[in-house]
Length: 121
Figure 1 (tube, rainbow, N blue to C red):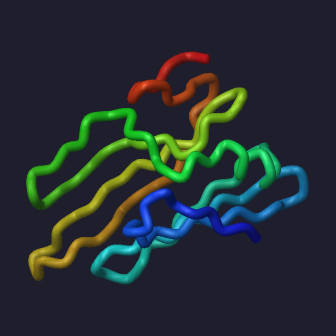
Figure 2 (figure 1 turned 180 degrees about the horizontal axis):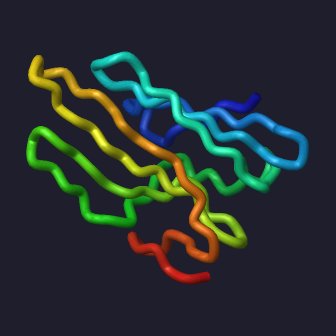
């Protein structure tokens, strides 16, 4: 299992990669006020390829929506030869004031994040 490092040491989220035969499993632990959310995605790439594609940051490919109670944005974690892995960021402010995460990872075939946009490869 490999743990990726963020360029920004203030980001508490953790991304780990683990080989599953010819595939890799991406696991992300999202740290917010309410217990961490753990999300995952299996992709058809080896861990080594994902590690090379990791830039130490998530690239936004949508405008952030933030009304104070809901924050939502799409970010690319990995650009690969035949697609990309996106992170759908959703944080909700609860009535008590704490924030919880309802995020998701997804594979987008035939597109990459380039200059803040999703574009066809």
